[in-house]
View (cartoon, rainbow, N blue to C red):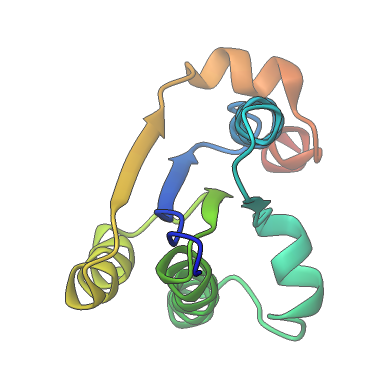
Length: 135
């Protein structure tokens, strides 16, 4: 007797730095796990440190980083894992390529823009990015 395969999906959270993407992703991940789902949170900072080590922040490097995260997320989701991805991903064409990858495999993909005002993000400034820019 085989167990029915769980339905995977990707929930891609994008927005400004310090918008709250990772906080939302972790809370969502915890809630889904509590409901019995298989969940992975693919934190953009962790992925950049390990899977995308050595990449900078040029448009090309950002695109490469997003495509790598998109591939991992799609593979997980295609195999029954709910993949929650908090990542800045500033370029629409990069995110569209991730969406197309999901569509081609018939894997659900939901993109959510975390619309936190820049003033709030600047106050939070988790990574000191806004302070560096102001200096």
